[in-house]
Length: 274
Image (tube, rainbow, N blue to C red; front, side, top):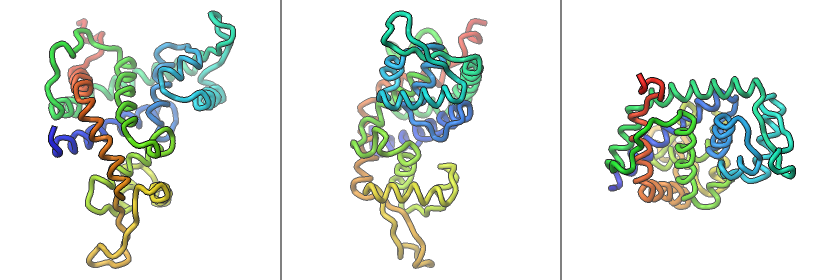
């Protein structure tokens, strides 16, 4: 995969992930949910009940993060908790009636998203290379199961970033901002408001965090007609973090190619049965 193909793949994968996150946020009322949190919500929506240990294993969230998530979902009336029948030491998380309705809403929303994203998924798959016949699934996947595998692939890419840019140290919206800054030649802060869906004050906070972590610098004197104008540039550390994702895309290209070819061709199982 050449540098141009990697850059285009990163752009399209980022756009796909951002839209997927917005769909989940719209259902559960989250704001730029982390990929691990989305994986947990998807697993719970699909299984209807899971132990906290299973949620941690499926999502990659730590025990404390799972506890915080479950507490929030319980406060919102989405889940209840009980002692698991199979293991009295385990805590089982169970969807309430409201949670069941949200799970169905998520399934419907993701079904629409997957079908709407077919062309983008096809372009991603073509850009990364044609999948082999052995890599393609013969039977259509359930929407939530396919979403769960997409989350797993996204988490795998994030894992290539340096430690300071993952494991909650660099939040999803901050990662999105860093990629946008690194892939452009001098970004004005105002240009980040729309793609990140935050106010100018929100952009300033995100940029503050990226600067504090050493990934981004604010620079002045680079705009010909406005010496006071601020542009954002990724530091060497920021470029390395983004470059690590590029390496991840190349290393995971077989998996990603097959996954997005499947998304491109996906239809709900009920429709394929007709």
